Image 1: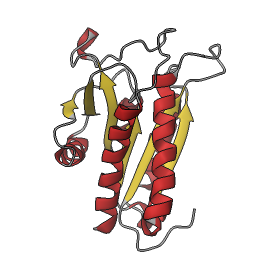
Image 2 (image 1 turned 90 degrees about the vertical axis):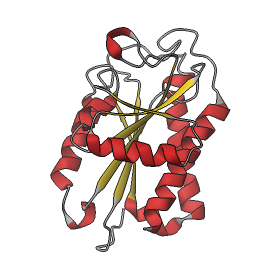
Image 3 (image 1 turned 90 degrees about the horizontal axis):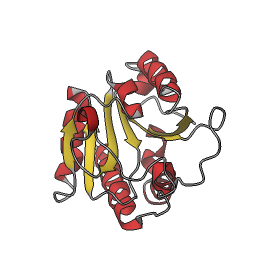
Image 4 (image 1 turned 45 degrees about the vertical axis):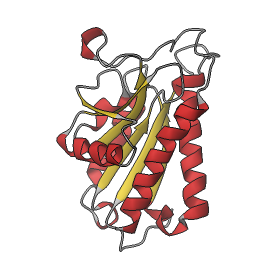
Length: 202
């Protein structure tokens, strides 16, 4: 990727793919996390087609090993923290997409940092009440690795408070994860896109 020295803002969008080395292939993964893969590819294509002037300010990252201890997320977070403050990475915003197109009926922008909370509120303010902003220790998502950055996770859940005060998604890791809610996925992706374009124009 070619980086312009005038870059003052970088958005990093990521999602986490079910690891293939320690577990058998998961055939039932429409929501977790095929939905995130689709969102990321959609955003990359739409930015390239409609706002190519900001594409060099974005990183689209695919990683894995969430189930094995958010290993991919920890590696990425470490690298971003090392780069933060340099000419190319004066400011970093990390957007994570995890389970955004299933049977869950509540939509969240989750974060575990004060800096991320401001980003989540900004995204939610442009989405006509579609999202609930939720700040909590995200122990069951890759976002936990990004608590030192401006990080927000797009996710859907059945209830706000599940076991141990965590968000829970319906049907993941079961053979019932066989439906893709494209309308819900589109809402999440469009909200992220609107934020990226707005920030890119500043």
